[in-house]
Image (tube, rainbow, N blue to C red; front, side, top):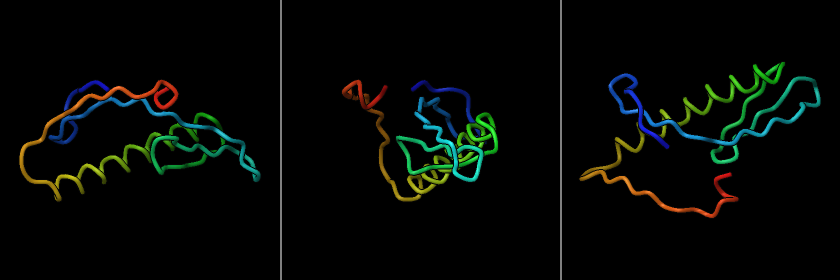
Length: 88
């Protein structure tokens, strides 16, 4: 994760997340994020990935706002090491 410029006055971090693409029974593709409860779809691989990215960004924006409303006190960032299969 690296920090970047701010988005609407909020610091932004670039995350690497895994999206699994599966062919949809009715055609097109389903895109599921492994790390988050987010899924989307599209007629093409590119559309499914673009829709998944948009859905992930929306999910993270909502979660960030919820966290901001619930937390008080000092915010501290910690870095942890995880087994490589979890962060592949």
